[in-house]
Length: 342
Image (tube, rainbow, N blue to C red):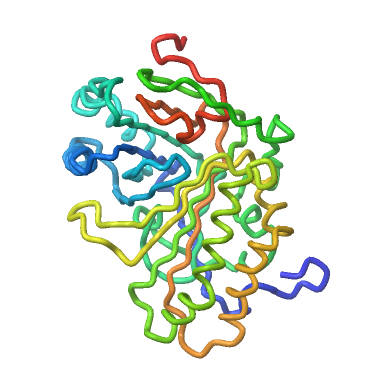
């Protein structure tokens, strides 16, 4: 809404906003981003076979999704995204014999690399939001509830209950200058500063009719691509430290899906808020999306959704095995070999 007039700018007053409802069911949203990077297709197939098997182990994820991207490192990467609403179950799964044997047994030589980034986000600092009842990402693990906090700058922040008392400021004023660390042949871990922001934005068009697909392809897709490219290319201006734009496929069957999503780590929520309000690439996306709802020629069925989490230092654990030096958060934060961590 307009902060001066109180009128919504981005969506109509009857926009059917939905958020995940933790209720008394859970205290955290736990997300594991597990990936392989390799030029060999056999590595990608083996990785997904492993993910499917491990997901069936005791305490496995409530939801498993997957996608593929090239990314800034230029190496084909397959990403598995696993969700839990029980932090203890997620920890038990990660420490289980099956999972730990696989992870600890990954080689530090050859051309392939692997990474794990594990997030345990308290419900007061997590939100999923969408305008449809479709269930992807964290929405596949919890009920949805109506919400009116949509359609204005600052809505992402206002949907996080903890924002009433916590400004989520980073201890770093600006993103660190990216480095080119020595990563090949090494198993590395990074620690994050408080209030690192995780965002996953998704778009799904499986239920769209021909006219809505045409609007997406002709008016929206290029603008989204430009904004995603801008985020990834200029961390100093946008605060975006890592971004993976994945074409999604069914994690169980491998069949391609009519969905994509962008998974990003940002220095803080404030950094991306400033970029979103001022960057021409994002303003173009915002304007096109708002126009689609102001002048509808069809009932919108595009599934546009976002999940946002704010992480404190002890709520994030990442390891990178023989990875490209540009992988994930490796360029921005000091890395230590796993055996050196206290």
